[in-house]
Image (cartoon, rainbow, N blue to C red; front, side, top):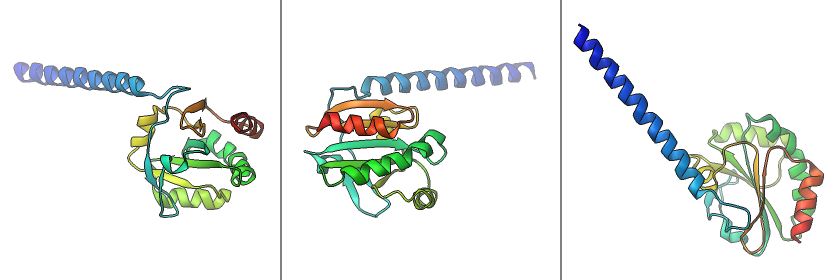
Length: 172
């Protein structure tokens, strides 16, 4: 019985060490790949709630606001109306707002979008691949991408409407 217990402890210890190493490795890998201000924005292609495929390169030549969010995130809920108003203001002036939902079921996302009357495209990052590619860890996180495809600003946390407007204006 004592030998068996010792082996179980060794296996559990080994599993903990392996999981810890993998987690550390993933975090190090994630931070190595994390895009930076001034760098090129990572390409992505996602399906939206509208059923259409959206690809970042489709918006080349425009200012693109990419907002990573979730229905579970209170700051995301707080800033959504401001993002939507800024989308309405700028959509005819070469500015695109894209909301990337993080791994939630489409029915939950659709309910949220209807409740908040969001008009800008909402894309579904089902397997969180794009979140990882952008190095997003906190919600909301917003990337302001200049017309040449470079990341002009990365904002982690809730934004005010005036901040969104000033940032877009500075990229005009």
